[in-house]
Length: 436
Image (cartoon, rainbow, N blue to C red; front, side, top):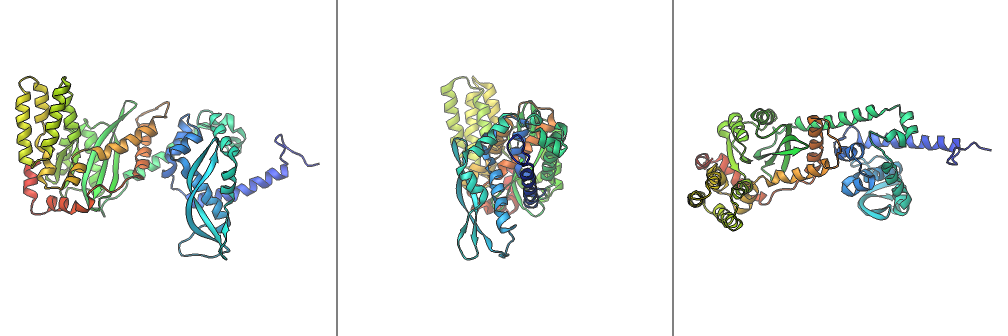
């Protein structure tokens, strides 16, 4: 009689199963290689938080399942190569699909295979996941039992022993991978891109500050430029980030627009590093908020808000005059609000002086474009139960920003960016310098 283990699986069968898994591991390595960045947020959620696989998949981890489906397909059709169609089973694009995951269905994109004579070839893993809800439930149960850097050995002791890995090794691997992703981000080169505008804004996580920069090229595409630990109120932190941008291709040889909030250190840092090449636009959303915070009367605040929004639609000098008139009226009983309105007033109208069309003005007059990825970073970091230090915050922020970057789209009015480029570097530069 064949010897069996406690789960009723023969030793011979278990050994055969292990041998069958090895090609899968090699296929993963071949397909995924050293590019760890895309899965870092998912890996972090599993290792450093209490989320289940079900929750992670619902938030975007379906990419892991889609990767496994491609690997399952590769076992039948081989690794796909552009222009190469050899073998009896061929890759044939992809299509929408869904699998059973516990009590619900998960939508995803699955690869398609066809035999050389034209019939559809099913993907083994997809066929199993499509109908077997127990497999998805088991994935959730494993994580619920404690697959994390703190308790994974209690759930998978045999796997840990076989791999010769300890809790500290798992933590080190995660740290090294996230550090590599951050280093790759900070080594990106922009010498081949013409960055017309740069948004800079800060985010606070667990008492630590991170300063981020996003750039806009002449085609309307957004790029994550870099991150640095520290506040926008710290001049040295600001100069560290800006010096990095200069070294990587966003130098002071060309004039470009910088969209910022009212941080004095941020403004002075840009002036020091970029000098006359920097054209400053103050964020109107921050400006309106700062003024309204100093007006306790709700009706008065609503009135001032309407006046400010109307003035921003006017020609530059006319809008500035309108808000100076509003500040003079406010000064009688709300001196703080009047002072806030006048501070940096001309820089709030830089986009007007540039002569930009309305669609571009909406995008380039506020820091909303960088605040959207900030929200994604907060989502990614909200599940972390314990922060060790500022370096951990920076690594997680990088993972969140890199995840948000996947959803970057061209800005509205991108076909009119030639107007911005001409205004910055053409014959109309003098009025811009005066307004900025």
